[in-house]
Image (cartoon, rainbow, N blue to C red; front, side):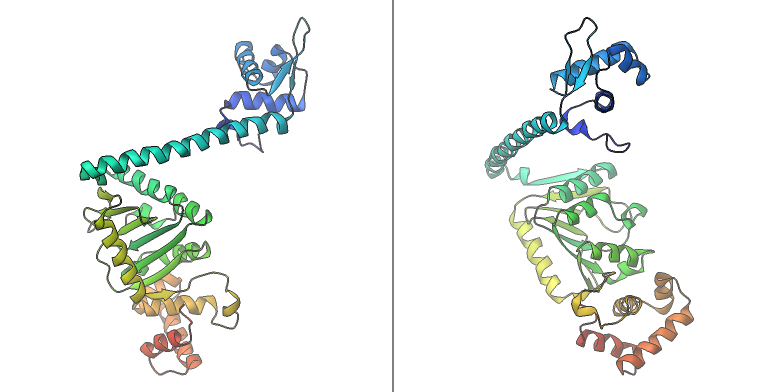
Length: 329
């Protein structure tokens, strides 16, 4: 184990067997009964685990009447298991190519294979998670309210694909910035590399993975998503991708990184950039105050300070001047 976390399950080693292997590394030469006693288990269970370790090359036994068990070098034994698993993964990747070719050929005969309707909240969430997990190049998203509670949190799959280096470009409807806690969520995603832009209105929610698969809700006027259409490579998917690129070019970039880049060192403080972002989204003072966790009066005071700093006379001019100076990019 590493700390208190078992890590060898991915190599096909049972949790109890991993515990026993860790014990042998600390105390080589234990018998079956000693192993059972130290792990507070039965003799039969310890015997089975030791046999598993032997079969996988992680342990050897002495030739004595009462056999004692010794661990094999982790670097050697686990290295062999890792190589075996890598070989199996390589064969699986090769098989995926063949399966995909079969899928494409079948789709040419029956186009229904290219469109899948998924119903049910859990099934929809599973498909969305799968789409994010299989992406290797880029994810394109239209994001708009209404949201359900779980959608307002950064999911593990979102974080995973960003950490894997998958590019993420997201167009948010301006009203999305009114959702509680949304600004902090967007900043967290921006820190991980998400590129975000704003539009007044979006036609629908949308997710496109690697320009090969897309998800569109059957209806997006309710907080929960209970039905989606999954599109594979089709002319309709190409049209949706072209729509995204067209709207991306007209959307307003927003910069929400917590840590400024080299070009931002002399720019506005992060708090003022947040204020600018919310002003550019057209939020009212009360909504801005709610997002920033300050009073309405504080928002108005900071807006006046920004006007002085940028040398403008109105809220509209604040945004225009900020765009000219690249403070919102």
